[in-house]
Image (cartoon, rainbow, N blue to C red; front, top):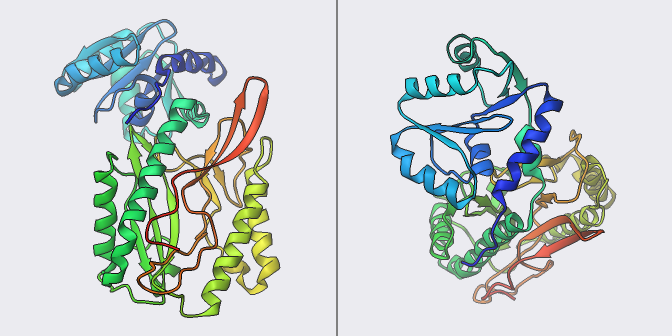
Length: 381
């Protein structure tokens, strides 16, 4: 897997520049995903103290070698403090001794932890709650990040292509989900980016249905929601497949309406557009084609994706986000029907492959592109 490098070391100066605006002189990073973003460290325990001119990382003995190797690979210079929780507390407390205002990640620190930090770790500092300091940096993806998301999407797409022919054997939802998960790993992903959803027949009405032992039957639709994980970055894709010819015109009409709504939403994507406007375009399209289906759209249109499966920006009715250069967002919606040639006539209403909407910049040009990943799955018409 040949992926372009990421300039991890360039992220810390951007974070330090944001500290003054947040009202703090330093930041204790406790969210491990944020720690990874800033340093490359992938362990399960670690605290990162970002000071104006120093970086102090505390962890336990399990990660002494790993942390040194990963920081070095990311070209991030730091002072390492390895030891038990008490030793880590003493090290970080001492390093932050001259800090008057210390920021905490409010979304990741419990009330109990805040009280402990205030009374035992940093009693001389004023603790300042901060929100989204690192997450706002993570929202804008660089070329290396986009490449990892794209590869995760390519693997997931290829895995589906390889497992679709197995529908002719009438597997259960659980069996098909296991086959898809195995193929994702076999093709090189580190794992699934979230628990795979296989929802056949009436179960398709439940957006977050858990695979059951229900047998997948001919003529019904199966909603598949799944993703792959590549170097920490996630893909997220929803596909709807049919085992043979869909058994009713109403099912086909559902696909037509969703396809039209999704296309209208994609056409609305550009820098400076409020994400709730994109969502509204999709809803208005559905209502215009099938007025009675307006209330059936119970999910948001999309969301950002990256190191976490759900990131900013949100694309929904209540979102306050605005699309900007560097955003990577999913396009939700069951936008295609695929069938195996062995099972009956195939219906194809949308180009296959993961679709990632990217607002990006090349030189002085700002561009919006819909990146299509993968190719037509084998065994479908």
